[in-house]
Image (cartoon, rainbow, N blue to C red; front, side):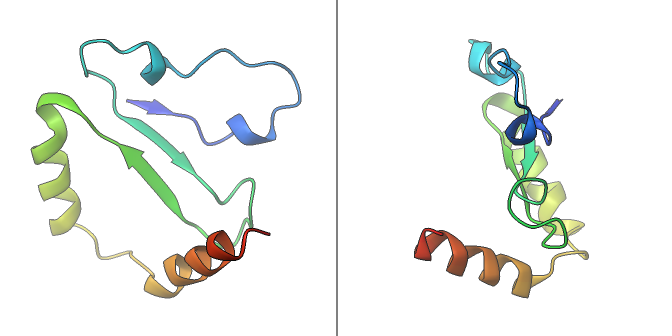
Length: 83
């Protein structure tokens, strides 16, 4: 599992994420738009591939009690606008 929340705010050159080097689909990549877009927005995402995909998706659906739909709607509006 790779948590890469601070990649977008680094001013120095950074190496590629571990997920980019993952040829066997073993790494799940986690990141957020909160650090670079708007700290209070609290919108994150996962890139899940390989044999862990189904288990992670099912667990996320079961435990998704913290989801704030308005945050995702606001993010989609900002993304669509392009600002």
